[in-house]
Length: 110
Image (cartoon, rainbow, N blue to C red; front, top):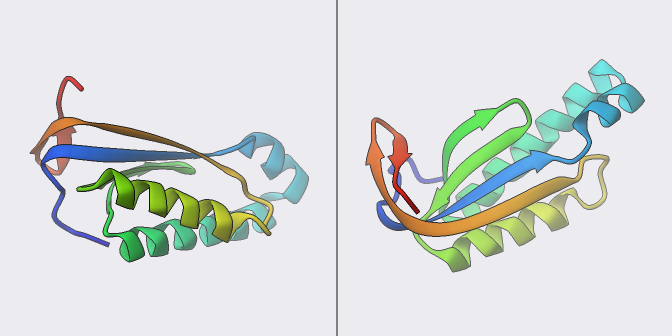
């Protein structure tokens, strides 16, 4: 996983666990926490493999950045295939635009 955030034309990847409230109720707190931790490990490993940077996390969501759209799409494919057998399903959005890094956060109109 990259520690320096890419600048200029950046591809952002956003994730969110699908139906997390329902899944928490079905699995119970302990099993859900374990599944969520596994999900975090998968995403961070995929980021490292594909050269992505973790910008932020909130709850079960990730905000990541890539210097290349191709790398972001490859990361999304890796995450989806790695989580396919488990209880957690992740929705992933990807956007490319111009961005400036300010205090480890992005600013931009795109």
